[in-house]
Image (cartoon, rainbow, N blue to C red; front, side, top):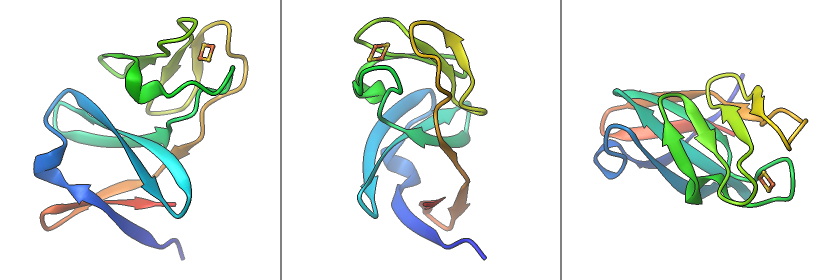
Length: 102
Ligand code: FES
């Protein structure tokens, strides 16, 4: 069974925003897309830039360093230079908290 850990309050992640959170030594990016919560690694698989410093358009995050793009729902690479998919994590809302399975 997967353990879900409290990441932050739902009010700390407004709709259509993203934020970096560290849980269990894992650096995550959390996203609120129209009220749906997603979580990926915050570390770009190209050269380790923080995706939460980048740009969010719909369910695509663009890395601020070289413009690589990932689908935040699946982790799939949508634009080079990255070639390795982004790890994704299960999320849930429990009361007033967003929880992540890390
Ligand atoms: S570090 Fe993200 S595209 Fe290069």
